[in-house]
Length: 341
Image (cartoon, rainbow, N blue to C red; front, side, top):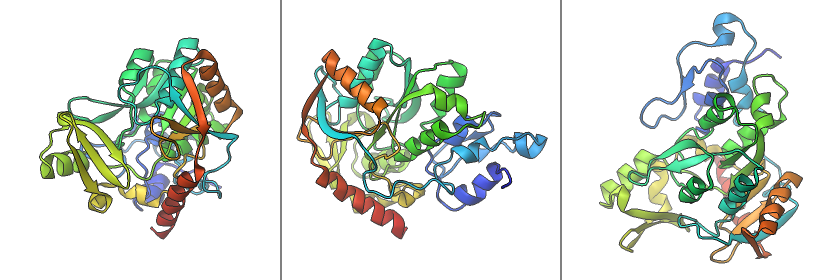
């Protein structure tokens, strides 16, 4: 089969509304030719230069990394393969935690113990609530940025290039929603010379339960500021519980029905059928756990090693078994919706 370039990615994924905006193509492009334009575009754009198209150099890294091309289908089972399902929580204060702070505890211990050098994730400006792809190397910064982001419009994997190619980290943890986790899994499985450095550098992949994400401009600027009259800096917490709950710094809680947020959901999310981030080493979310705990689906021996290490260090505390019936219910709904779209 002929090697495919960004032109194939454009025709098969960008132009058909399938793009997940995960940023994998941006991270792996050796020419730095792909980027997101200012605003909230549905897919990246190209500078027009491509090593393969212009110079005849074998590449196609962007196509190979994309989770939405042919061969990027998720597990046939709703929750994917896993070794165990537990509930857990951090044993230290995590001010911005969405549930039990278990992911923060696992990563904080890994940084402390030298198991990883850096975490690639999404941070948030506390004034504007605007998210950004970032590389975190200190426990204090990790704890300060803890919490779910419901406006993951950023190409979060773009920071993977900063971590692996620019700063030369070789023990990286990635925290990602399912689409981005699938892209990282493709890098890890590839022996292609332009993807292999990324795959080798990712020591731990943590996936987050996700029904959909929301566009920052449409959600924060349009709905929350424009319709509710709440400034971004007045928002202390966003949570999805059958509706979007907006909690303000003065304690008010306002609800937005999910049906009113359809226009805020990026087009690529409508095609996603993976709720539980089946490609990760550990998948995590609030669903299936009691208040104050996080559900962890430990999928691989690597994931188990990180969890057990954090438990042994006393930074993570295990609870009971997770109620997977609730997780499966949301996974089933997402799969049905994605297949319809």
